[in-house]
Image 1: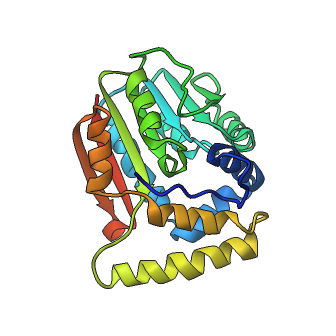
Image 2: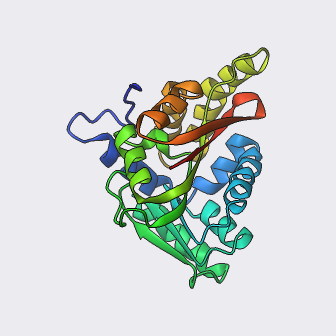
Length: 243
């Protein structure tokens, strides 16, 4: 079980409540700071996720923890899916996403939904493909969230997850340590409204059960054909699994 890491030192509120508060606060600056912190590489990694989904020709796609909607918009542009759903627990992030969806004239295909990844408002066996980009580490109950995803996926449906991980080989391991421990929190303190948020994001990434440990969790909740693909020597990892 992964160590629970919360954004704020508030004992009387849950991780879910604190994560919602944090993303509501940083919603307006999130995209720009993400580009800065990842040196723009996150866009390439998301494109790899889109390619994996597009290869299965899904008709219905759901992007969980969609944030401001970058990934669900890209999937609408690169697939023939008739219905796409961007779901997030943060209304602030969704409001930014809705503006982007409208700007791309995708209102007729993309629905932005306020919802909880651990209690998805969809029927069993109703979605062809699910994606999560840098969101599963924010689940309060990781196994419950993954089980909910499996529930709503159709048989043979695909799940693709992009999440942070930690490089294990020299010199990328050492470089990642310096960058994540010093550079990321410093950027957050300098440019973010929430001085704590980017410290939390770094810490939650470092404690997430990446690689084979996460593969085993996916298998435990019932997924098959579980694979993972390192991005930039392990700075992030893409996981693919089938119901």
